[in-house]
Amino acid sequence: MSLWQSYRNLTPRTRVLIGGGVMAYAVFGIFLSDKAEQAFGLVPNDEDNKKLQEAMPKLHMIEREKK
Image 1 (tube, rainbow, N blue to C red):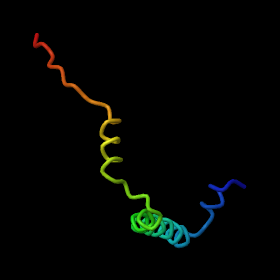
Image 2 (cartoon, rainbow, N blue to C red):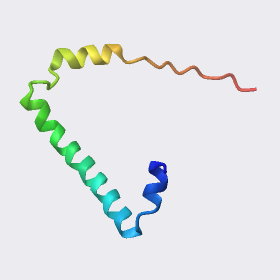
Image 3 (cartoon, helix red, strand yellow):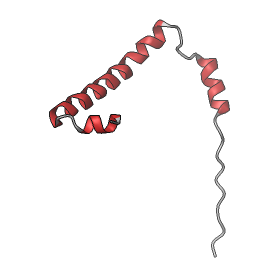
Image 4 (tube, one colour):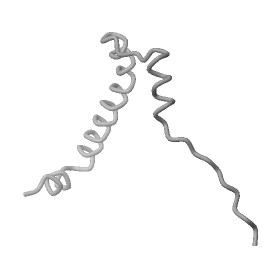
């Protein structure tokens, strides 16, 4: 039996609890990631931000001639 079929065979309440748990885990990770960056010393400094800006592609708008 596939994983999807096993999931579909669960009761709706169990599926809601699993989905809520996955979402809570994701939200927890988002809030924790900033503190983890600071703890491991991975916060970007001004030089890193400048390099990132230089690496971004530049967009140039060209006006189209009206017919």
